[in-house]
Image 1 (tube, rainbow, N blue to C red):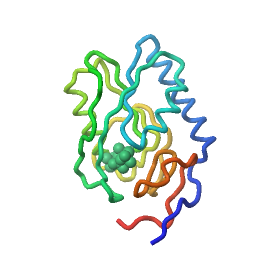
Image 2: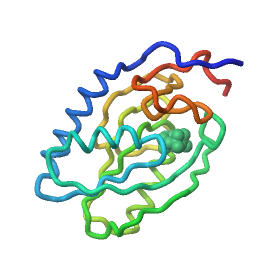
Image 3: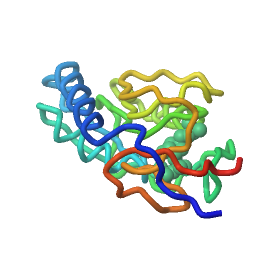
Length: 178
Ligand code: PRP
């Protein structure tokens, strides 16, 4: 079946405005602490790139590769580490930056994994919260938007590897088969 990026769910202007809000909040909360922002590959790369430029304070960045969906559209339940951090987070104020929380399994895994590395603090900043689909209770400290249970593409979100580079967040049409 032919899929396409359908109606715009969140336009680029709203994403940009909300990202500025989140950046200001992070800049205020972590002033003088030089936090490390950890982007979760691949989807969060675009959000992270915009977010760091909205934080009016010194920060560091690193990346963690985690995959839970593989080529399918719904979480298989198994979280797989595909790339590890390049720096130690011991004693650092760490902020995990995610594009979306769905079942919560990926973030649950990351929180547990990071906690064993003894950071000074661990926070989570997520652009989209698909709260209706939560299976694992996971604490989110900064949330951009709560969205309904729709499959989204654009602004980092893909379907079969496509659409990540679109500037707006769209609903995939027709919806993928579960
Ligand atoms: C997506 C998303 C989160 C995870 C959320 O990643 O970026 O990491 O799924 O789902 P969950 O809350 O049900 O665990 P995906 O595996 O699609 O990889 P990608 O970021 O490379 O697209």
